Amino acid sequence: MASTVQMYVQKIKLRIGADMNKIDNDIGNIFKRIYFKKNNKIRQFFINIYYGIENITSWFPLIWNDRDWDYSYLLRILNKKFDRMESYFNEYGITKTSESKARKILICKNLCKRLYEDDYMIKSHSTKRCFKIQEYDRELLCKYIKKYLLTWWD
View 1 (cartoon, rainbow, N blue to C red):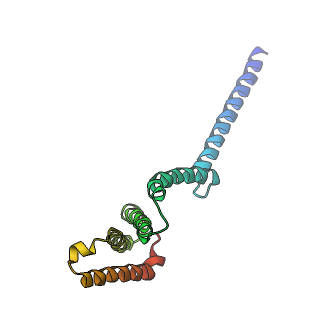
View 2: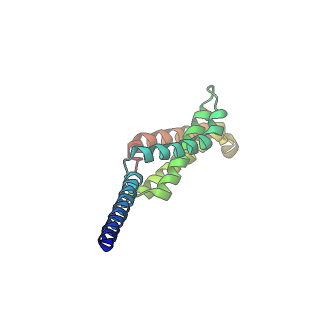
View 3: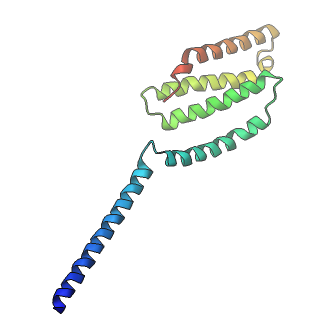
């Protein structure tokens, strides 16, 4: 009789242990599904917080010094955005055209920088030539934005 009771106790222990292992595996699988699922709202919430803080720290100095009375501040904001987009396409671009997109964005970034620095007079030594170069840069920037804006995504 004692051996029969011990046998039942052993079966119960094995069954409880097996059930606990199954519960542990189920919890682990649920956690993995929650963590690794791409469209998971909880995971996306924390990713959004991370990138939101990164954006705030990156953009804060520029926004703090932004003023509404001059076009150069708008060009500085565009320059910053083009800079971030260019580095994204160079580092994380996954399409075949990522390098090409990064080059076009680099051109726009450099044009913005030239326009907001506004040192055409120093480089050209002629007022007429200065205004022609500046106008050409503005037109080229607008042309690039108009032509390629809708293709700058990855």
